[in-house]
Length: 326
Image 1: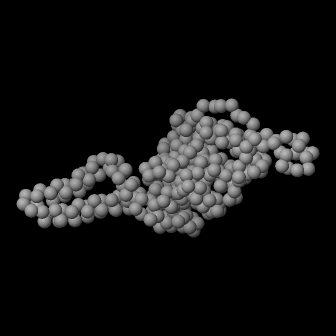
Image 2 (image 1 turned 90 degrees about the vertical axis):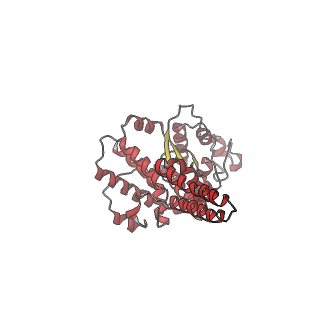
Image 3 (image 1 turned 45 degrees about the horizontal axis):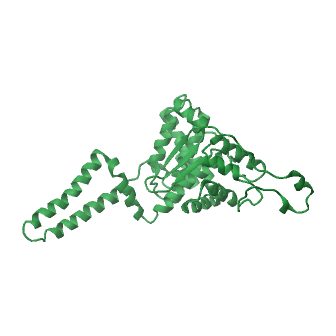
């Protein structure tokens, strides 16, 4: 999983919705309201401006549209948890909240790697034995050729393991929990970001491309300049650890934490003043705890979003599902 905060050029911000106020006040029937566009989840609220802002990838316009929707009572969950404040956190608190094997959260999983290598070695070994039954010189040449495949894979894995990630990622789909893990993980990033007020640009659940993109021009500038303050790094840390927290609440072992921890470290490295190792460790624990608390308190929203994302719903449709489940 990867999180990116992407800057975009500004654009004109159209009015969020258009209703004829005189008709609202005087008409006996609400069916005469003039609504240019509507949603099945919000029949009397126009979402055209929000949809346009998302399509044009404009963070300010998305925020403005969602803020206005919240003011009229529709986007109730948008930025409903804006205040994020770090505190000292222990592993015991994570366990008490329901995180399984909290002490091992930061240890990268080798499940997929081990399964891939075991399959390669086992398959080539079996084929090598069968090839040994071939007549003549073929019975010597072919087994050596097949056996060299395992040696090549091991050599590549030792020298440049990144070259095997595509194969390992594809192999991971054979695990029965793979699709649920991916959907749960990415939906957690999406939902927590929405709850604390960071708009979403897009997402993907495709193999090797799993990610959720945030859009916030101001944060992007702070990250590139290395000027993130404690308040901003706390918010980003919670979003970064949301996927890990979601897996930790559901499974005994977390699989997709490596990219999340790398993203968090990137944010930490851009923080002023710099955090000590103890502060970094506490930030990670606290962010997992805070994200897990949000997910537990909004379980119905998380599950609704998982379902929508699994069906490749648009960002707008995902937001509608969140608000519908609220």
